[in-house]
Length: 179
Image 1 (tube, one colour):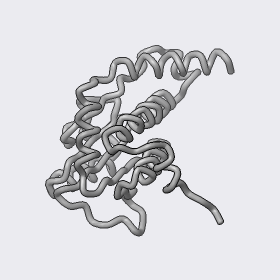
Image 2 (cartoon, helix red, strand yellow):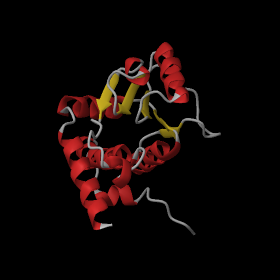
Image 3 (spheres, rainbow, N blue to C red):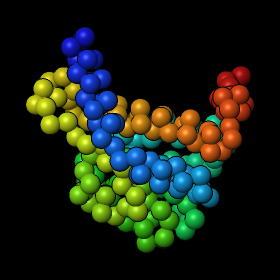
Image 4 (cartoon, rainbow, N blue to C red):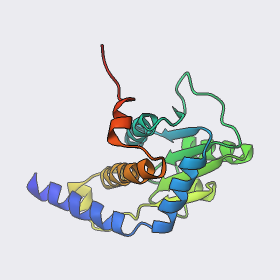
């Protein structure tokens, strides 16, 4: 377990350090200026997206997860963030193509800048893939991408809070309370 966690932490840190800072700035600008924000991902990428959506809702933003029954229609002034490790997940690519035709902004978070999803996107945030073969035993499938994406998106929260003039106390007011 210690070898695995050390490997995951090292590889995730390495991937995040390689992310293009200018893309982060573009994404923050797109989030702040969007009328509505939609997030989409399948499987564990979808769970990472839903986790980020919760934080955006706590900031008071109008956020929806594509595919939920209450999700409204995407319009031109909106932002759609699509998370897909390979960038080849058919439903993610189809969603990006539909959104692009509408004229809304598409942000893809993917490990492949040359994927179909990236090509269909307005802004591509590439999280470089791990080339170490030990990944197959220590962090199979999309583990490194998903963990790196979760950390990276959570790292946007303080930047967004500053841009939106929010504090932890203001987020707490929108935090889920189970009665």
